[in-house]
Image: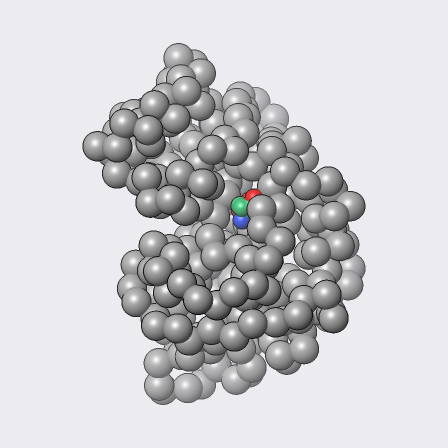
Length: 271
Ligand code: DGL
């Protein structure tokens, strides 16, 4: 048993989709969330920069005595996981393995699409994880850099022509090739599920990395006897590296609930 908080970080606020899933699976757990809003996006940056930022983010969480570090960010998970694994002295969870396992289990025809940021797709981390599970799987990969700004601008409705056209442009190849499962390999993409689902068809399974990662975190905490014994609802503390004004507006897109301005600013360069 451990009453220390779970640490979650992301390049920005998209990782709150994972916090939402963690809270619904383990409602009594306390969570420390760090969103690197001063340096987001990570998805177009070099591997060296992503690794350096990820190490600082993780060290910030360790300074809060977390019992586990979760990289909710697809870009960090696919690029910096070896380094994070080596540096951390608490369990480290990233989105790749649990999400790939769920996709391999869901597909019926063996054709899986993977979407993510440029860095995630360039790393081929999902492709490698899927092929390790089953070498006969056929993997289609596509970077979708416009999806992050679409979500942050709130262009997320299936009725929105800009959202529909962007989804069609990126996912046409998946549709033409009969992909039956798609990994939403970036924090922001679950918010576009309704638009993506309408375009690819409701029989295509959309795998949400935040949800699968939360399930994996719950399993690891249980196996290691690290769940807390609180009977109250868990508390979430939010930290960002840039302005805190307007945090609740964007956070509510990802959390689907209003958390107010309960957020503090951190100088992440110090970590
Ligand atoms: N959080 C990032 C991810 O999941 C998306 C935003 C960014 O590019 O930093 O890959």
